[in-house]
Length: 495
Image 1 (cartoon, rainbow, N blue to C red):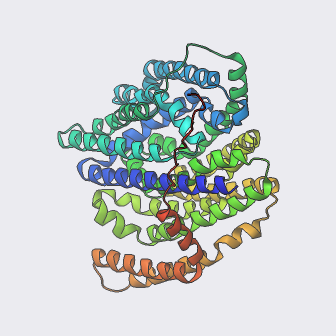
Image 2 (cartoon, one colour):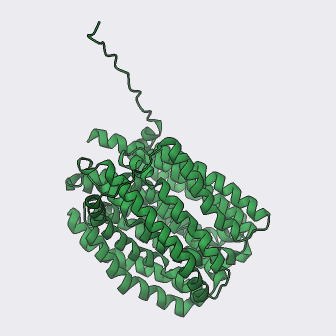
Image 3 (cartoon, one colour):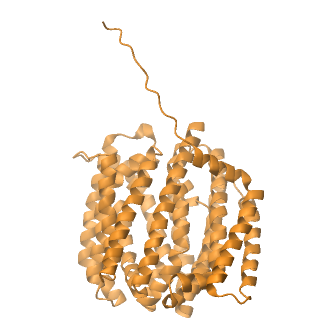
């Protein structure tokens, strides 16, 4: 268990570097491009990505998750080759389907002719990404996240520079479209330089049945998660238009994207780690409680700040043309806080082989909660109603999930909520403090500066006095250096 803990801490450390470096660069790119482009450009990308993401889910077939979850003693090289050829073949079929059928359908659905050309270009990474799926899986199974961190940051940096150059040259929405292609191509080159794996020309039926038996549940669960995550984009794009969708997208980028990326720091590491101890419920429960508290410590204050300071953040950071994003940013910030309380339930349940349960819960919540809440919100109040619908969906879905998830881990809701009581109280205090500042006659810039400084000061003191143990653990993690392996000298008995 000590060896696993070391691998987890190193993995979290490098995944943190990758995620903050990756998302920091992506956020900087979006800030720059938001100044150069218009809300409707982001809206068009959002419309296209709804269709592309769905085909992308089908092409992967859950093979990556199945390969990681598979116990070491049940693995051999034929599993990797089989998974590659299946993924590559389905990706090609998916790209063909997108080019021939999905692109015209998207253009008709949203009444935007440019989507006929835009959608196939955005779909090219579906095929390209299959080329580094196996090298990435191999590194993840070994909990070796350093190479992944370095390669993700480099690919995002280079692709971002290409997008900014194209935007400056007047390419408009195409500067966003070519970003994904550049990222995929650079990633392929970098992964194969580190892990020069090539598939064998073989297809193992037993391996396919074994992988798809698990991956099939993962795929269906992800399909319903896709509809849960994209129904707001679909309805806004169809009922309101590309400009409104662009404004909503900005609020989504600043909230749920932060949540996804921060939780992916832990998810990328903990999924293979959970899988390796999937029969030890006590250890799983211990890790689960620690993870949700760590999520809360970082995301609670950030989302609180976004919710209160939405107006100066949007107007100063992006300009008056993005003013419609203010209310969605506030509502979506609260939705992220609710989501964080739920923890990484999907990750932990999938790792112990409960992919079928996650699939069923996703189906139930999507059909009976997500679609009605967001549809009603969109029809009544536009993008503001959609944002409120997302918040309502998070609350109700949380209640449905926890009844089943905590039963598996032998955890009750009060035990989970107890992890958040201190940080929740301090965030309420910060909210009141920031609202009080808004009544003083500060300019937006000074309000943002003073509010940021006070938030850091108050929350920093809370961490120091009440969460010092976690700070020490993070400090030790940052200072941890890998031990060098000493080469053993073997003396031959031959003369």
